[in-house]
Image 1 (cartoon, helix red, strand yellow):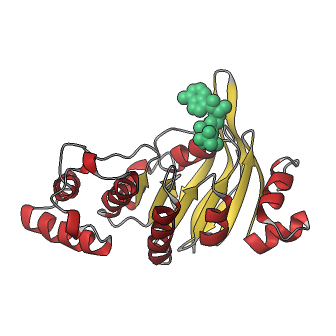
Image 2 (cartoon, protein in one colour):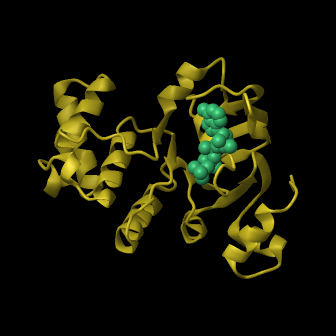
Length: 243
Ligand SMILES: Nc1ncnc2c1ncn2[C@@H]1O[C@H](COP(=O)(O)OP(=O)(O)OP(=O)(O)O)[C@@H](O)[C@H]1O
């Protein structure tokens, strides 16, 4: 089953074409990473696919829903854990989660039950009553992902989920993301190549708004004729589009 299909999707701003002619196909249940140097168009792509900004040209479907016409349906089956964490710093971990439950219309009982469940899943129970603003960066990211999971999305967008985390916190979050795989489709952007290499089923490389290539790690290594993923990324991201 296809989760996301885009057809010549474009986003232009006054002075720049942020995304040009994006043709992308992502299967249900896979973890797909978008890679590219600064300004390549990754965040703009995520913003379009999560209905935060409208494309200027082209079209796309998300689980069969039209990106423009069916945006309301799409918003009900996706969620985003943005680059900047979306937590309320003065609320406790538990209160942050209950707050999101309320936004989604859970009654008090359901909200409490869901909060307990999700804290257990993400090992947040021990810090349930700690103010979110006093958590370390890693735990804030974990809470931010927990908040995005409350609505049980079919697609979870993770924009640079481990940015700024130490190596231990990053590995812990990788383990957690691996556990989420299969349960939902995950679209991830990252600058950490080993992260993409470790977690992804497929990877797309963008440069200057263009989609250069898409494939598994093995396929990208083969295409670049190397066994080093960083070398493959550098080589492929400076190539003309291969799609
Ligand atoms: N609101 C906006 N108005 C004008 N230009 C924008 C806007 N948002 C993004 N851009 C431009 O679009 C291009 C792509 O930006 P985008 O944020 O999608 O890149 P990115 O791959 O996510 O980069 P990074 O890795 O640095 O986060 C950049 O040249 C950026 O300056």
